[in-house]
Image (cartoon, rainbow, N blue to C red):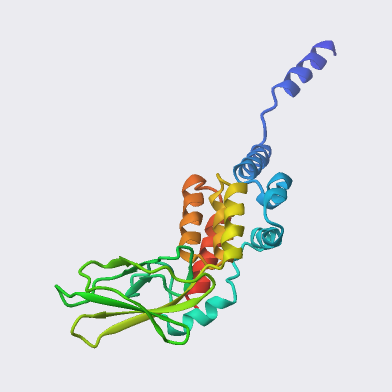
Length: 241
C-alpha cells in the first residue's frame, strides 16, 4: 500500500497542464499586456489636473466615446468648400485651409496643380462679407503664405484661379480666436509628449489637419493601441459627411 501511495503522488506531480488551462493563461496574459500597452488617459489624475478646465470634459468624453465631435462653426465653413473629405484627400483641388480653423495669422495656402501644364495662379482672400482683403502676386508654385496678417476669430474665404482663365476653386477657413489659441498652448504645456491629447485638443478647436497628424503620430508611436486609430477614423468620418 505504501508503494501504491508513492506512485499516486508521483503521478499527481507529473500531470500535464491541460490545453484549456494554457489558453486561459494566454488570454489573461494578452489582456494584461494590452492594458499595459494602452492605459486610459482619462484616468490619469495628474494629466487631468494639468489640462484647462473647459477642455477637461471634452477630453474625457472623446476618450470614453472614442469619437471626435467637431466644433459648430465647421458646418458653416463647409458651405463653400471645394469637395468634402479628409485632410489631403486626393479628390480635393484645394488642400488647406479647407473648412477648418487656422492658427497662424498669416496662413499658408496649399492646392493641387491644375490640369493644364505650366499654369500660374492668383489667390484672393475675402472676409465674411465678401470684401477683398488680400490678393497674391501671380504664382507658379502650389503654395503661398499670406503677406498680410488676418484677424483672430474671423471667418475668411480664399479663392484660387488660374491666370487668364475663368476656372476657380474656393474654400472657407477661420482664424483661431485668442482664447482658443491660449487654451491650446496650455494643452501643449500640460501634455508635451502626448500626441493623443494634442490631437483631441486640436480637433476640439477645429485644427483638423493638425489633429489628424497628431493621431497618426500616436498610431506610429503605439501601433497596437486602438484609441488613436478610432479617433482618427471618427475625425475622417465626420469630414466626409
